[in-house]
Length: 165
Image (cartoon, rainbow, N blue to C red; front, top):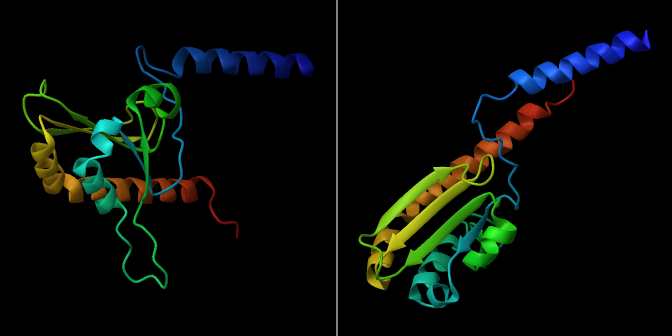
């Protein structure tokens, strides 16, 4: 009896290994971080200026209708070098790059850059004025995408663990 169970388990594992992933398919780890938390990845030189204040102030605005003041999001800041080493799998990431080597202001988005279900936004601008203009134009879109992802993550959790009757 044990021999049949062992052979069946080995066969199952072998088949799962062979047919489980498509060739070249990348399996990503899960996300880390608390719900409604945003990790802003940029240098202190950018963060400690009106550019950083613009991002902090928008995402830290209080939610309307609550009996006590609570921010929309918890905003965390980290240096780019620490992001690669430690927090690359964070659930909501906004990376800011500002420099004369950047041709035009742009917002790039990717879902699942370093972790499954991760929302990753890259804001690039040549200078402070073009960054603030870009952020002002795109902040609502970024917020809506993060809120939608948070809702979907919550619903996925309910689907995985349905209520017992």
